Length: 229
Image 1 (cartoon, rainbow, N blue to C red):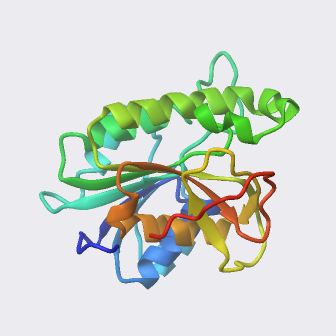
Image 2: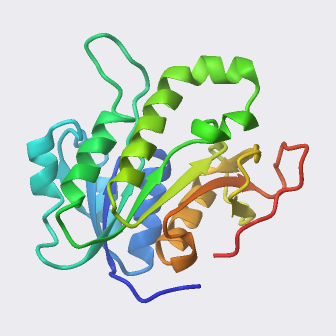
Image 3: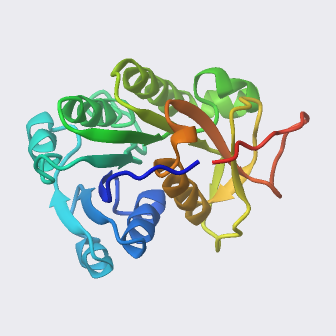
């Protein structure tokens, strides 16, 4: 079920992957998009799509608080794909800390929906992945779990989308979401972006945690019932 909501969207983690595809799709749909990127490398490409750019670190709370206020008093939505590639003693994972900063900045503003792109394998969906995979991904999954919990506790209207294995292939149009935490499989980044847009515009997806996979690439022994958005 769709609802009439704001056409303003703040997208964090927009420089590549799912975040870039989300900006592209939102701009094509006529949204006013502010894209947060850490460096200026992809600024020309994002601006050519029609997005306005904020360059800075999601870990910088003061910067994020200012950047996310660019819509003024107008209602808006947030999509974040912020995440780290690794973790050292000196470099905490932005999977949690960056997203926590964004969530805290949005709480005092007219944010109509905060959509966090997480991952299958986080929290109760750990049941969907083999133990060796869980162990390999443990640092990222634990950080993403803390981000999910912080968002749910924030009282913001939220949606959490947990994609399966991400593929850099052309979209198939066969992406689905489900509340079944046993769902496993893969999905293209472009199809995840399409699902993100559908969830942003659907009241059905509000305050839901959803796994996202390609219906033709499901790797689950149990039947998976899609959620109609």
